[in-house]
Image 1 (cartoon, helix red, strand yellow):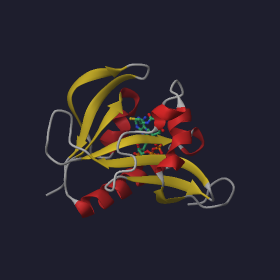
Image 2 (cartoon, protein in one colour):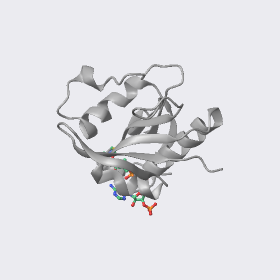
Image 3 (cartoon, protein in one colour):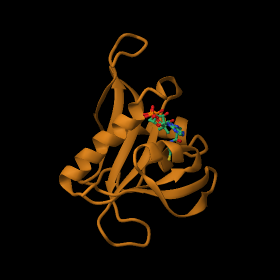
Image 4 (tube, protein in one colour):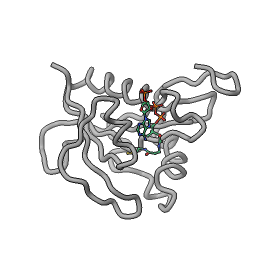
Length: 153
Ligand SMILES: CC(C)(COP(=O)(O)OP(=O)(O)OC[C@H]1O[C@@H](n2cnc3c(N)ncnc32)[C@H](O)[C@@H]1OP(=O)(O)O)[C@@H](O)C(=O)NCCC(=O)NCCS
């Protein structure tokens, strides 16, 4: 897809280090750089996707092979889902989730979950996720819920 500069934006794999600038600016401006390294970032089953224009990363998503809270069954966890304001509402968030979902399910068709912030419930709902359980607070960020996407039979 062509961006404002005319250069196209593509979804591709990036490395964990390439997620950190957007993690900080968009998701956790109150946190220090070392807190932007999430557990499992470099695990063998983890992967990171970006919406990338040239060498500029404009949106990010990270996927981890991690059980849901309090459970032991295999699952996939999305974290660090964010796009810069410039490209929001153009479908890149959806593309990142769909590409990550398909890639994860090619490895194992397990539930995909995330701790969604309340302002993003509508985004995940459009992608088929449903809220599971009660709302909870994450200090400094606000109200969240676990949202899940079950594999289609
Ligand atoms: C949430 C976010 C990642 C969405 O990315 P995006 O690229 O703007 O999303 P898309 O354009 O792919 O939107 C896909 C669909 O969800 C809808 N949508 C996007 N953000 C939404 C939101 N916050 N609430 C409700 N619906 C939303 C879009 O309208 C679109 O609907 P459509 O398919 O009917 O056209 C982005 O807005 C963002 O980075 N927000 C700030 C950080 C954040 O909250 N991250 C999530 C943390 S849990």
